[in-house]
Structure formats: C-alpha cells, structure tokens
View 1 (cartoon, rainbow, N blue to C red):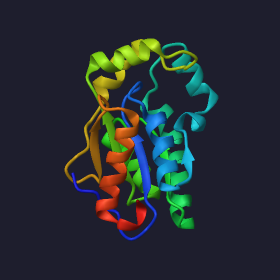
View 2: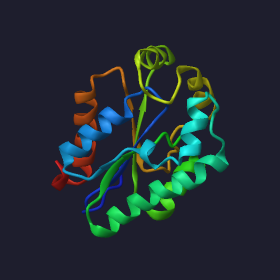
View 3: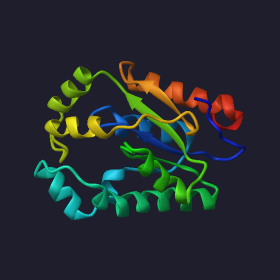
Length: 179
C-alpha cells in the first residue's frame, strides 16, 4: 500500500495483534524519526486492564473510549505540528476509523507474522496483562488494512531494527524530510 505523508511530521500507529513487537518497533521508530511516542496500554482505563488480566477479551464498548483517547492524542500532536507514534492493536477497520476521526492522515504500520512466531513470543513475555490465550480472540477479529487505508504491512520475522528502517524508508520515500 502506498503511504500518504504530505510535507509534515507524520502521525503513525504501529498496529497488530499482541506479541508482534508493537512497543519495541514504535519506540525505536519514534526515536529514529524524532517524534513523540505514546504506548496505547497507558490509555486503557483500569477496568479494561482488569478484564484483560483476567483473560476476558474487551468488547467494542470497552475499546471505544480508549480508541477515542488515542485518536485525540494523535490529533493533538498533529495540530501542534509534532506528529507522533503510538502503539495500538487497531484490529478492526472501525477501530482505525475512530483513530482517523481526530487524525485523518494517520499512517498505519501493521506488524504481522506467523501465528507460531507470535505465540512463541507471547509465551516468553512476562509482566504483561495480555495473556497468550487471548491471541486467538485477536486473530479472529483482525481485519487487514484495506487498499484505501494509509499504511504498510511489515513481517515481524525480521529484526526490530530492520522493521524500523523499513518503516522509515517507506516514510522517507513519501517525504524526504523524515529520514
């Protein structure tokens, strides 16, 4: 998919199911591009965290205020001219639409990989409220980026540093000032 980044600091959502490396890639991409960074998990109300920690998947009603808060953060950074990078699963198009409501030109970097690789990563992760068993519920609702959505898909079989450089190169191809 082509990226649409007009002559401005980009607003980027690094998306995908749990375990694909959203936090690692997003933080490094923000640093690489000199952009503000936010972790979507920090925007969840405590009730959402409690549900996920108990192994209960969130429903759309749980996600809506969280997505609106993330979209608001992106929109505010955009209005300041700062751009920004945020992590967010953004699994459904309707979720991405909520993010676009406050930041219409947001670019999605969809990290994806084999189910086996992602399951292995989740099994090794400690101290996170998202449990490996919840991966199935995320995969069941995942809607890939549409041809009309501003973004790119990257395979997480590559090292995080490679993914950051791939994303930066794609953004650079659209706007030379970002590199």
